[in-house]
Length: 584
Image (cartoon, rainbow, N blue to C red; front, side):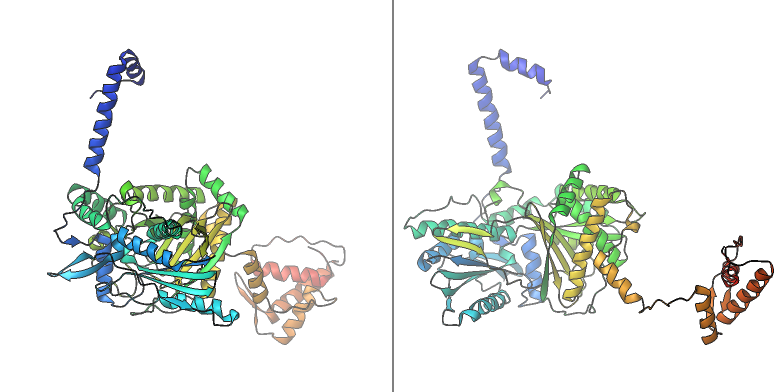
């Protein structure tokens, strides 16, 4: 079809009769619907075995290598304030399990290959633990301990269920609802879907309504079948080709200085350090991103990668970042493991300015997002020939920027819901930096592997990151080699620690102090420059020159010009002038 200039198309439309315009519109809508139907994820053959998605297959392999690992547990806890109808809550959870096949799916091995098994809907177990009998001062700590313990209970992928829920009762109108899902059937987006839909369903069941949410167009197993067929042929070849070029020669491990050695079988116990970037810095970062045609994500990433490179002493830094992986509208309301990981590589060589670094980060991130369809699992299969048991492949550090999920405060009928926190679970990577954009400020959290890093080390790292971002905003033309990581408080502390206690001598001149030192340690080295002098040699040379100058009339108020190349000779001359009572 030829492409007419816009003006010509307008003229043609103006000349059409209303009937012809209606026919044209019908043709366009029919073509659009046909294209949409052709591109839509089809429903699976119910009689065929259900393959795992690429992401699920990686976690299935991890589970076979390390049975009982809790590294991929996804805990979430909500505080419920108000009168709670436990029956309505149970109905809501039962409806969620009916609605989302992922919540009743297990992974099994059949004929030597892993498959998904979708089970019929069944009532959800919701044990209720009553903490009301405890003293009020013990209820909250006990609840947090139970949430943490629940987060670290392992799953059996073959037996299931892969979602657990527990209700803690702290009072007549105060409860804590705990969810723990395995990552193989969930991701961060899914947790938001879970909380949002449970809230809607609870509100309806509480009022005695049989409200149901719109039926889902597809299920996760449909996506897995479609993904396997789609990532074949030309698309797979193009995606793999890009990533092989992008990561050619990249270091397999970012060797950050750790507090403890990296060993096989290291604990995955995690810790987390929280901090907040102030409003003024947050506004400066937004303004800088806008001026440079970048995004806030890319600007923060530039600072993070610069800091990591400085810590590791490396100019080649690879960081992972999660992407939702929900490239189709019909996937947006599903619970399942869609998230994909992208490797973002940056070269810090040739001492770039901040502005140049931002350009490099922007170009690299844009290209990576253009090639995000390749599952990370396939990338690892293509690039990593030998797996290490001490670190994750391709990258060991994560960065993400999120908007507020809305799980901070919600309502469900008469209930007020807010995040309870806790239940952080295990650390999947060495470091995991996440910023949450709250508008005026940026709330940061650095997750870390406690077997490698102490809490104080990570806290200092957060302070250094803030100093780096401050430097970026203050002068985008500054070169990276000119940027210091130290905050003012650290600088003052180091100076104080490095300087010995000093009492200023009363009424003594410099040459008198040196004469006293020469008497104490005559053979110690006093000067090291173009030559060396002991204190005794320095004193003798200065005395000879002083006697010579006095014979020439040098005394108070008499100036002596000095023009010497050698540093040792210059120092002897300065002391000689001072001893003679003159000035230089």
